[in-house]
Image (cartoon, rainbow, N blue to C red; front, top):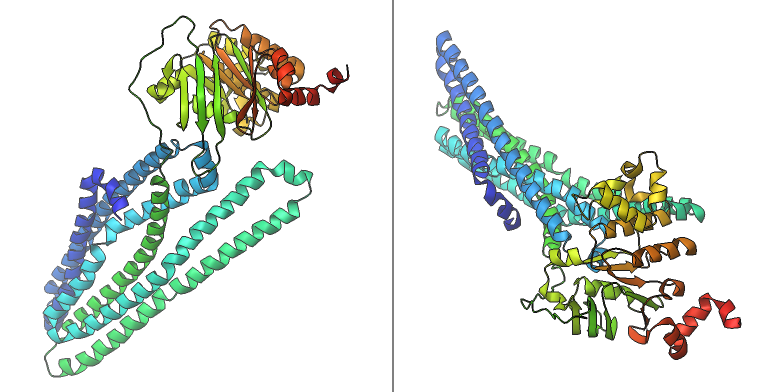
Length: 577
């Protein structure tokens, strides 16, 4: 609850006025039975038509006033709920974007989607109902008890017994359903995970003829969720019949009790009608309260799941105020000094004792088997993690001394998997530089060997891009992501196996273009292809997180057995010669 209250503090006016107007509505509602009582005992009993008409007019005024109060309360409650949920969603989105790729992978896309959609909607509805009913319903219940005591003190025991019985029913049902609703949320996440995987991998599923198996798996998960929801529904379904039973029993006891009281003149007919009305009000409000508590249990379960995400700490990184720069003439643009790093939660180092340096305009090729730690170098250069030992320097400064925005303007990386967003080619490219003109866009497209196929499109750089860039081939997507990285003209360009979908001719032209860029960036090429790194000024050979060689192609062919094995495995004809 305190998690939600934190977001309501900025909307104190709405949070106060909503229950206040609901209280006013409740007061007018509690006055209705007294007016009806007097109408019966004074107006109808005496045959006073004018008194009856006046009482009817009062009832209309009470009804209209209560309606205005209810509408006003619901307006403020909805306003507070929507604004609080919006602020919660914005904070959650901002927090999630600070997660490392590893944290995002561990939590899963389905979890994030569920938290930001269905869970947040449940919390929003819970806040709305809470502001409307958390004071009104208890006030009506206990107000009816007090007003019944005003009419006849002896009837308060009957009302108290009914309220106690109804409260027990609501408590037991809430206690039974809360863990079930939490379980439903978890099963919904698993269901969304399966749906997302099936949609993204539909081509693979069809290629292997696994449609029937996936449908069966989906039906199994939905059936499990269906059974859990039915179980929750069965328990919740007891709410109405049990509350009606208790109230009707209480009403029967009240009428039996009133029989002698009316006969002896201690209660009037109007008093009995007023007591019955108060009993009906209690019934209605406790039914509302029961449904409200059921909704609140779902909202609490959803809020707990949202809070768990918000309390997940992003990987902590240290920052330094030391901005001393090595101003010597040949200062490297990128430098690793004896760097060792272990991913959080892992026992074995991902890379160990890695050292190299790269000057402006130079190219570093990084080769090695899968899992040798090649991509980790990019994460450390972008300061996504802190090194355990050693030092990473960018342009003569410790990488820790840069803010994220400063580092983003210096280092530009292209991930292994090309990612395009729905929109246009222009909107994808200008993500890196919002105010870029067509000349900058064309330069980036030409350098990445993309200009030719883009210009063949009907709308050129304004051609639509479908979600994930599915209307482009794999090689086209890779070249467009490289173009996006070039838009901000970075000092360091890092390509993480970003040309794997290109043919050798196109890759050769791409690397040649990168070497001729007018601002002479340092280029790091991580690749499975030895041909991609063959002409690099420096080549770093990785094996099990360690350096298995460092030098030029010719030097490594002479000194590094690992590099020779990689090269000859890809070019066996040279081995034969």
